[in-house]
Image (cartoon, rainbow, N blue to C red):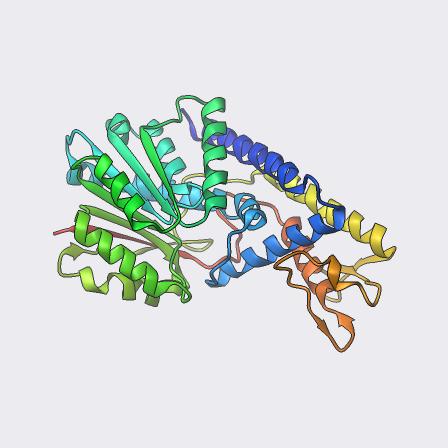
Amino acid sequence: MNDDHIQEVLTQAMAAVAEDEFKCLASGLDEFDILERLTDGLIELQGLSVGQMPQYNPWTSLCYLTWYQPHHINLALTMLTEKTKLIQKTFGNNDGIRWIDFGCGSFPMHIALDVATAVDPVLESYRSRIHRIGIDSSEHMLSIGEQLMRTIEALEPSLTLGSKTLIAGTDLRERLQAIEESGNLPTVLSVMHVFYKENIVQVKNELAGLIASLEPKLILVMGQSSSKPLLDCVFSDHLDTYLHPQSKLYGALQQPLRLSGELAPITALRRKWRKYIRNVLLRRDGTFSEGGSTGQRNATVVHQKGVSESNTSPGSTRKVADGADLRTEGYQMAMNYLKQGVNWSGHPSAAPVEVRVYYRV
C-alpha cells in the first residue's frame, strides 16, 4: 500500500466525516446560530498554535478535524515509522503489546498506528498483537474519532488493527478496569499534545500514576516546542528509570514528515464554510467589503449597530466596547482561517513540534 493511496483514503474519510458532522450539528439551528458556533470553534482552536488549551465542544472538535487532525496523524505516523527498530528491540516477539494513548482525542495516534502497521514490514508483525486503550476527557473528540475510524475501515478494510477501548471522562475505576481487561502485557504509553499551563498539574499526576502502576517500556511524547518547560516538568521525576535520547523538532524548517501535499477535499470544504459565513453576513447586514492595506485580501464585515445579545450562542466570544461590535474581528479571523489550505505538514507558520522518546533502562 503506497503513501498516495493512504493519503487519499484518510483525506476522503476526514472530509466525509466533517461534512456529515457539520450537517448534524447545524440541524435545527438558524443560520446565525451556525455562524456563531462555527466562528467560536475556529477561534477556540486558534490558541493551539501558541500553546493555549482549547475547550472541545462539538463545534471545536469538528474544526479540529479539518485543521489539526491531518498534521497530528502525520506527526505520529512519522515518529512510528522512524522508531521501528527501537520498538522491535524493546518488545521483540512478545505475544501482545498494550498501547495506552493518553489524551487520545479523535485518534490521530490510533490512525497512525493503523497505517504504520500496514505499511512497515517490521511493525506489521505486531499488527494482530496490539491492544489499544484510549484515554480522553472529551466525549465530542472521542465521537469524532469513532466516526473517522469506521469511515476509514469502510474505505480501506486493510487499515484496521486489533482491539481498542475508549474511556471518556476521568473516572479512574473505568481506566483501571480497561487496563486489567487487557491482561498483563508490556506497555507503550503515548502522550500527544496534552501539555498546557491550565492542566499541567493534573496531567503530571495522572501520568505519574500510570507510569508507576504499569511501568511502560516505551513512552512516546509530542508537544509544541513552546511547551518544553511543561514536558520537562512532567517527566523530570522519571529520568532515573528512563533514558531520553535527544529530542527531534518537526516543522516547516525542521524534519520532513512522512506524508506531504494539500488535502484538497478538506480545503474545499473549509472554503465552502467560508462562503457560508460570508453569505450569512451579507444577508444579515447587507454590506460586505474585502480589502487590506498590506496587499493581503482580508475579509471585513461592516455590522449594524445594536445587534441583540440574545442572538449570541452559548460560549460566544462576542464582545462590545465603546458601542462598537467587536464580534466583527472574530468573523474576520474565522474567514481568514477557512481561506487557508490544509496541508499534511501543517501551516508553514505553525510552531515546531517536539517529539521525545523515553525507554526503560
